Image (cartoon, rainbow, N blue to C red):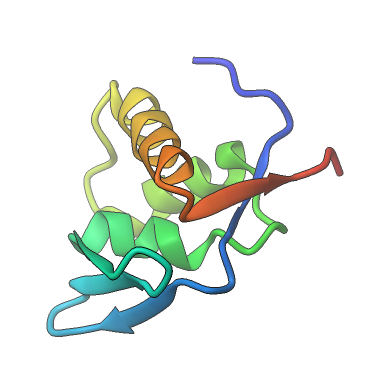
Amino acid sequence: MEFKNEFPVVNPMIVYREEFDDWAVLFDPDTSETFGLDPVSSFIWKKLDGKHSIKTILSELEKECEGGIPEDAPKHVKEFLTDMENRGLIGYEGNK
């Protein structure tokens, strides 16, 4: 899967709270909605600083996961980011 030069960044209003074993909760104060993140999603969330491209995030995820990542991981990461964007939880910085 080919990615444009996209640099995702979190909405600064979203509250991120890490719980146990790298699970986390997101809270959107505008909508009062909460979202649970598993350890992989939490890892990705921490990289959404506008400095990491999607390609870089995937590379770092692969390094982090012993035994590698599934072949369809790029598709799942893109779906996760699209869902977060549709919910207003993230946006994208311009090309770097």
